[in-house]
Image (cartoon, rainbow, N blue to C red; front, top):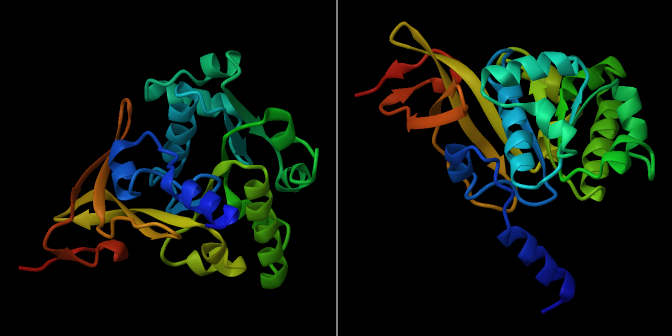
Length: 249
């Protein structure tokens, strides 16, 4: 067997577990190594919590994490994490995790060889919050596509497993995907709110996972102290992704 093919098959057999048990089952064990993964959904749906848990669980297990934020200062993330029972500052002090506040332009410079953040911190897991901010640089579809390609290719060349957070709801996903980031990402997880019998619940689905099997069902999830709990499937309901579910008997 050709050496490159053996290496590819080996990489596909390995998994980078998110540390969220129910999500890892949906991902058939976790993300593929050195993959770029998109998590998108409405504000407040749980995207930041998922990203924090990804780097937090990794840091506890020996995978150095880098959180790059374009909108939240580290002290806000420390506070939010403490409410979940996670001490991010302690992990930073131990050199297992780094939270950085910067701009999209500065981050793009860091993708150059020896260019900055990725070279300096030598992380295994990287989260960008959020890729929606790259629309500040350009609204041109083709230029945005080039920026997204630069980001995804740069992260893969850095040998990191990355998670890109994107803000969107059903009405404006076309704007988020103007640069066709959904085609560039190796997997897409969407988080949303759904109304079920006059109550609002959270829903999670893996829309795609390149080069791997994954669960197709839509599952409920909750954010609790300790992290994200993935629960049962939405049974006998349709229209879940529209936000307004209907009972089907």
